[in-house]
Length: 256
Ligand SMILES: [Zn+2]
Image (cartoon, rainbow, N blue to C red):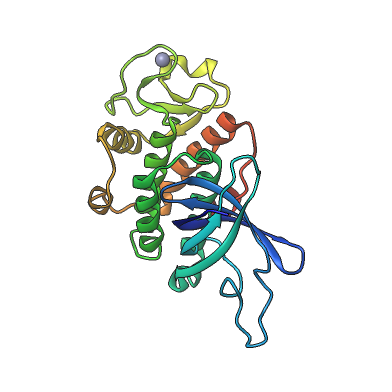
């Protein structure tokens, strides 16, 4: 059986029987991968486990697996942990943001559709989440992911009448149903509107005009507090839930 190798981040993990796990991994060269890790928790007589005692959410490692396109699940045969993110796991806010990034990736990236740049961005984002820049780092990653997956809402103009956004008018809202901004004149038709601070819209509009939010750009973002990022994370969660027609699990831990 031909074996394949890839650098992977664990996006989802379900314990399966007493000894095995079913994993959703983000492979740098393979996109989303669904695998079974048989015997992940089984220990040898010497006490060692085949997969370092199992794969945890957000773990970064080198995976070896058998990939057969006619099968739903690939089989993980080796896992070498490169980073278990111990510091991240000691910071609850960072951990929830990391898990939310993983949830979004698991829903927006397709199987066997590689996104190496996004993989590198997620790797760096997870490292940066337990710094004081966690809010802007997560926001920048979210925008990058939406753009890469083709789900970036329009922040340049009203989604209903097309009038251009300007922060001279403070009265703007976001509508998940319309996948974008709604101006003062159109707000009565958008029953799901969420008011947004025009300065925050301005920041998002500027960021979305950049060709790509690399790590250096993300590092230059102004410092944002949760008071500022909560409304943005809220509208993006509504936008995703509407687009995917499903409830997301992590927003209840990420939003106040
Ligand atoms: Zn309008």
